[in-house]
Image (cartoon, rainbow over the protein chains, first blue to last red):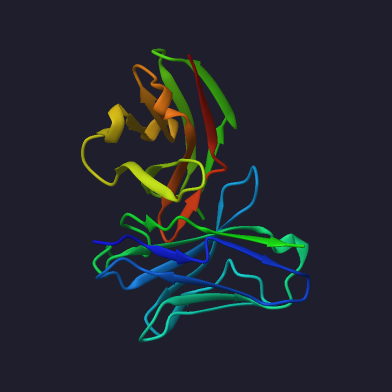
Length: 119
Length: 110
């Protein structure tokens, strides 16, 4: 049973380019979460999605960042016109549909992350 | 809103010594509490979690944590450190969403 799969593992972009990070949740999981990790900092929540719906995007910058989780295919985190400050590790996590009444009541299963470097 | 504070960004112990990683939370109601471990260049793995019931929770790799409501703490302990325990440890609190602490990097000296 494959875990959460993220790709690419490493991505290098020049300022102004676009970055697309993909996440395939664990089989049977319908909830996807994106977090950003900066050096010496913890994980910062960005967005929570279910299939075809954004449930909570309160942690995502209003400009240049977007996320989707289509009916078919992986979840995508898209960063347009990247800047150096976007350099970070981006982690995707998933949870099963019966995670509980509270949004994050259950365990999150994490992918290995995508490390974005902006030159 | 809930928050979590991890005291000490770096902890160093000798192999065989006690490991104590501190976590305090702030929440209006008792939250769910988690400890995750992150090895270099990997994602986070769940060590243990507290939801309800027994306040002393045992996890993988010999780790355990005790939920103390009066102290709003959820410290992680292991009686005897092993070299393979060297990693970054994150405490997390979940109520309406999941918030992570800044992490504690554990170093184990031979």
